[in-house]
Image (cartoon, protein in one colour):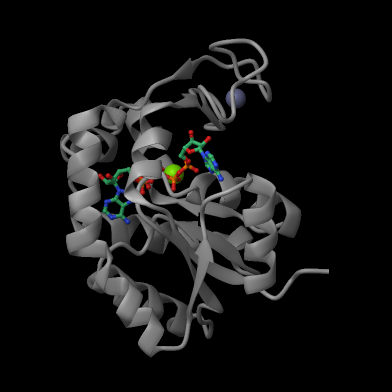
Length: 216
Ligand code: AP5
Ligand code: MG
Ligand code: ZN
């Protein structure tokens, strides 16, 4: 199972990938999470990426491709993965295809999460994330049992720096300009499946299972 989750900021990629990767026993490879972990560890990569992330811009392709090349080479990715937030440009998509081809592999499907802009704004401004395990909550639609505390690990919940209203607008523009061209790219390669990304989290998860051909 080699899947890519594609969609605008706030579409629910991370929410669904986290649960499905557990269910399917494959790693969840999220470039955004990897960059935030690098930043929390104060590595050179993390500090460089922060300049772009805080502005809602994309981190340069070479940096991201290098990061994913290393990650995909780890043994746990050999029997499958869900990539979340990658690829985000045509150059990244081509690099991914090459990396997989060199390993005798290929993507099985790309799942596009279709969500209206109004709903994206609502989700991003109410999002809270666990500092320790990166589990995602929403103040209204998915609140933690105890305010400010992660149900799963007891970690502290915080608001992402790039979830401020101006940065969110910028991220949506960047998606439209730099990432949306991937829809045609994958459609032409017969890899794209669109899933309606609004409604209960469980129903969307079931639609993804169906799209991935694993529904029972
Ligand atoms: P990244 O971390 O990937 O952010 P993103 O793509 O902008 O997407 P999000 O994580 O914001 O949204 P999501 O789809 O995961 O939604 P979630 O499940 O959390 O990237 C951040 C930055 O890193 C980029 O801007 C860039 O700078 C850099 N970067 C990362 N990858 C890169 C790459 N490949 N190339 C270059 N730069 C890169 O859900 C959102 C909220 O909605 C949550 O509160 C959740 O609880 C709620 N929610 C989820 N599902 C539902 C539902 N069905 N109903 C109601 N609420 C829901
Ligand atoms: Mg995410
Ligand atoms: Zn946690």
